[in-house]
Length: 216
Image (cartoon, rainbow, N blue to C red; front, side, top):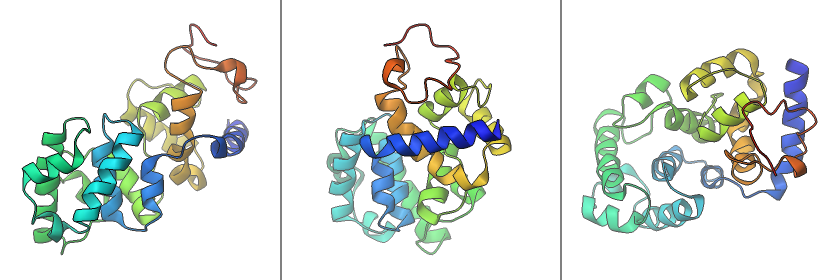
């Protein structure tokens, strides 16, 4: 399995440049964990293009937790509209920023437990902040990572959380940070949930296509 995983990663790296880079990866180049946290929160249930535009609008106005707290919930909601659940996300952002200022000296914590203690921050968001914001090895599992890891037979799990912990056992640590980067655009453009493009997939020869009922 280790040899197969190495080959899968190698091929995904070949494919990656031809696909649209995830917005959080783009934001992470700033080297700012707070930017990664905000972008990840906005990305939930939202398309990348909308997330990118909303992130840029919001961070152009407030770049730190302290600056964010100067805005009202209504102002934040207006800036991030039309991301999914924009009113809820605006409220969560303010609650999180208040905690960051009061408890963490206005900094984003680099501990999984501390991140998970923040309002409505789950394992996906926490791991993305660790990996992309702090360059700490962590496996961010979203619907694409969960689906494709099972489809390829790397894991056999029913939930993203189960997938995360199983991947920690079989995925070499050197790939943890980039694994999400590689699989998200691959899952959005080629290995789709329904009728994936197996005919043009460079992984087709190695993929057991577990759960695939029809393909293109």
